[in-house]
Length: 124
Image 1 (cartoon, one colour):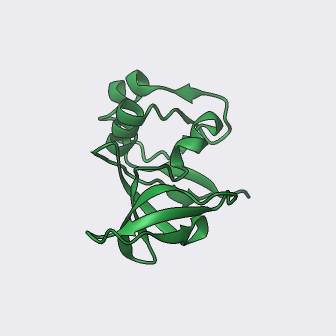
Image 2: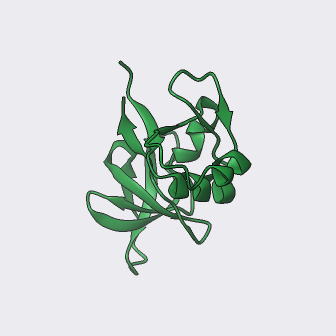
Image 3: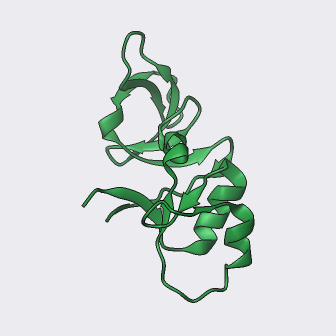
């Protein structure tokens, strides 16, 4: 079975749909959920996983300006390193001393465009 990104909290899913235009689907990709669908069913007590629609997966890639954690430390992505697709220039804390972080070392995106960014879970 493939590892997929999902939310099991409809409030988190609705927040991400509203603020970051994330679309969702069911387990078989046979139905697409938009923000209005999520809000309409927010009080539904079914424990259903809301899977990230394949068209929305790129939203969860690190971007310039994101506040992230890398190896447990907060950092701000200030750009990509020239010629590297998986390496970012970052600033840790209030230091003006840029460093770098590989994509695989970025644990979480915690803020984008000044708004909290709720990372999904990963699993079946």
